[in-house]
Image (tube, rainbow, N blue to C red; front, side, top):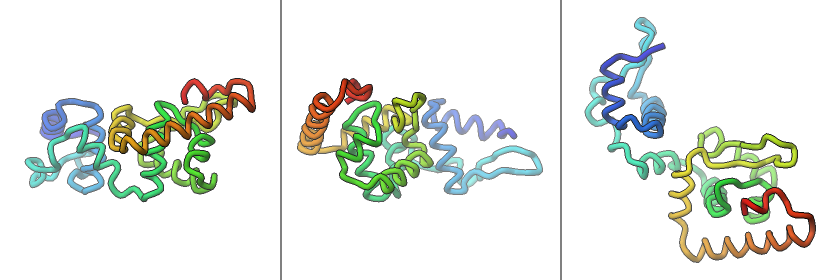
Length: 178
């Protein structure tokens, strides 16, 4: 499958060729049905009436806000805590911070993976359930949106978890991330 030259030119101009913006513009345009697949020509095209003002100009903030729209309260809460934990986070730590059932947490994490906000990076048995944000700018945006008081309280909870890890077990492979 391909795209028309005019569609490609518009996309590169609109996104300044930034891969994150290209991805998000294509996702958003497909969801809003402003892009369509022409099976006869076997290529993607943009509806002419949208080429001028499809979306607000692609900025990091607007892209991230569009991605976060429509998430339920629990999903926002999970992302908030995960952003404070750091670049990498695990289900066990999130479950302890949030005081949430494992089933609910796994459901939310599954939804966040489907929405391409986080991804599973576990590749070893001892690191089961380790995740990260798909883009660092998404984590920073969410982190910066938290109040100083919330960040401080969450960092204190994390410090208590670290103390508990240290007392109860040999150093966990996750301690360095916390």
